[in-house]
Length: 395
Ligand SMILES: Cc1ncc(COP(=O)(O)O)c(C=O)c1O
Image 1 (cartoon, rainbow, N blue to C red):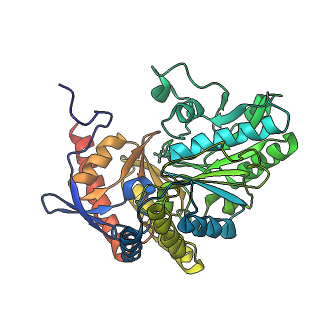
Image 2: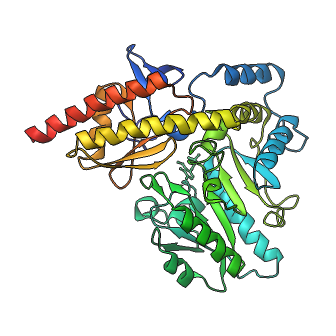
Image 3: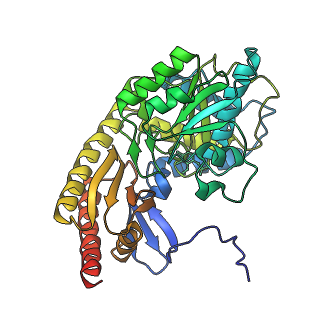
């Protein structure tokens, strides 16, 4: 009999009932160090007092009004994002997938309104992940996500990760945009080198294309800058955001330049919940914390410390791990042992990591992780590594 919850996830045998900072309490009372943060969502950790306070206060005042009316909290969050980034305008969504949908629509509408309706194609990369909607799975293109779900939304051209010549060769009179994650998350923490991001910006400029960055996983302070592309010194035309921006409240956004957004006039897009007072109040509180030099400096410092511990772990367990990858607090351990075994050994030792493609485990901890938490991470990951090493030896 099918379970009452549609069985699309292989769930770990864990049920968390409470969270505080970087710690989760299981129903049986065990405390787990959370190095996954709901896959890069709980940017300020669990139950951050500022977020609890903001949400509670707003909940007492007003939960929801339609986008048919002005929403001051939405205006405030949009103003902050415009002040802090390349963007001139913002549309709020409830998830990364919805941000992908709008990014695709926005790019196509831009060219339609420019009198070039044939320009519909978006170049994307192998190993990418942009969400589970029809546009999202077509954008990523992997068989794992698309099989059985055809006919797929047309208009996506897939290029090998890191293949700039492939990008140039894929450009035609029908090309509208290039869409890329500055660091692939689900694909296995694969950063796009700064020189390649710069080159992609140049390719877009030379060919009149829009650059769409998917910062759903790598954005909002995770790499030690507010947005990951800032390290490369470039700006996109359109950017997808979600996860960390809501700190655990479902919130996403599409940020865009005035030119890129020019086709999105009244009636061309909408959302019942996107940008509602609860979500935007929390989003403002998240940004007020994350978008400060002191906070981002702290992320960089803690990232350096965590990375150093992970390098030691890899050196001590060459049969289990191959290398450390990533940037800031978006780190990956490329495994030699099966990554599922390493994640499971983490559970046994009360530390949570997240598997990714390419046999990688991801570490995406709350950005508020403390030095004590990092010390605990080392202890627990070391125990997990020893456990896996023992399993390999007895296999
Ligand atoms: C880079 C990227 N884009 C898009 C998405 C989809 O976001 P959501 O699950 O919020 O729809 C994800 C989710 O993991 C992601 O990592």
